[in-house]
Structures are given as structure tokens and as C-alpha cells.
Length: 274
Image (cartoon, rainbow, N blue to C red; front, side, top):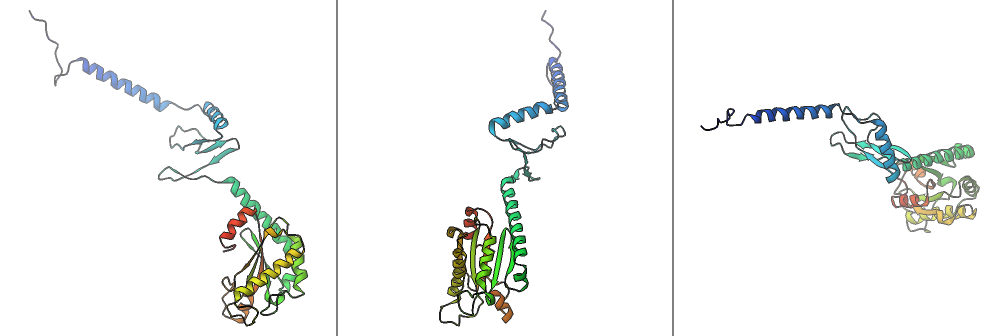
């Protein structure tokens, strides 16, 4: 007699396949439960992060949206100097930018130095400011010391009048010798009436040069830290539509720039002041 054949399941599958499928389903469920209940040990994670920071100088952590993420370990850079947070695009999850803490601190320092210099100049030049002989303005990290034409130059001329010389000398003495100075001459939009200059460009540049020479005569500022520029009527304070407005635009400015010589050079390429 022939051996009895094993009964097959519907579809032609052998019986052991049912047991095997049940076993695989149970094992998968078991591992899913293990994964769901697993949790990172925070202390070990921090120890590992510290070791990697010491080895590489900085370890980047990518933000996790998981409920099991370790509290306090948001995305950022862990380094010897501390934790620097990063900015993320919420849609793509990519890093937008990393804050430059050193650069920001430098900008803050320059701003404080500019505020201190402005206050010192205001206190020392209070009477001159009230008399309209000089005006002060802070533009970003720069201090602008403005001399109107009527207290500095005769009309159409580039020689400093006598009363402007002690005022300029006094101001230079209040400025630190390591600062960069930009002396800028400005005119209104009317053609030059004097035959000494061909155009407002020559007049504005010559007036700036006269102020620069007076600054250098005090031997307080290094000539390499001094820049002279003539802008003619290209940078008016107000529109050249009345006699009073034209008078305001005829001026020479001493711009005290904060920061290093390198940053000043880069700003010069951008046109000194906007």
C-alpha cells in the first residue's frame, strides 16, 4: 500500500506554512513593540556627545520630531565653547543658517563704542551744536560729524576760515587714534561760480582735503587711517529746491568708522555710507 499523503490547505499550500506565517507575524509584532518602548539613555548620550565634541571640535545634531527624543538635545552644534542652536526650515527640515555669535558680538561692541563716542562728543560740543557750528549723527556703527559751509568756508573757496580750525582740532583730540576717518566734501547742485574750480567735484574734494590737512597737522591720526572723498551734489541731505536746503547740502563731514582697518576697507568699496 502506498503511504498516505499529507492534507494540503486550500490553494495547495502545505500545513506547515500556516504555523510558519503565524510565527513570523508574532516575531514582527514582538520587535515592533520592543522598538516602540525603547528609550535613549540620556546620560550615556551626553557622554558620547561630549567625547565626540572633544575629538572633532563640534558635533552636529539633527532635530528629531519623535516623542522619545531626548529633552534639551535640540538641533545645534556642541563644541568646547558650548551649544549653538541652528535654525531649521519647518517644511524641508534643512538647516537655514548658523548664527555667527562672534560676528554678532563684534557688531555689538562697535555699536557700544559708537554710542560712547557720540555721548562724549555731544557733551564736549554742546555749545557748538546749539550755535549750529557742528552737527552730530549716528549711522549704524559710524559717527558723522558735519560742518556746514557757513562756519567752515567762504563761498566758492576751499580754504578753512579761521574760526573752523580750533573747532576741528578740538574734535580730533576727542577721537581715538586707532579709528578710521573719512573726510567727505559735499556741495549743492548749482554750478561753481568761482573760477578756481571747474566743477563741484573739484570744490568738494578740495574742501575735504583742507579738513584732512588740518586733522593731520595735529599729528594725532595716522595718515594711513584717513580717507578723503569729494561727492559734489550726488549725496544731498535734502532736496536742492530752496536756498535753505542748498545751504544744508553744502557741507564737509568727518565720518568716524568703528572696527578694524579691514572692515573699513570693505565698507569703502560699498560707498562709505548709504
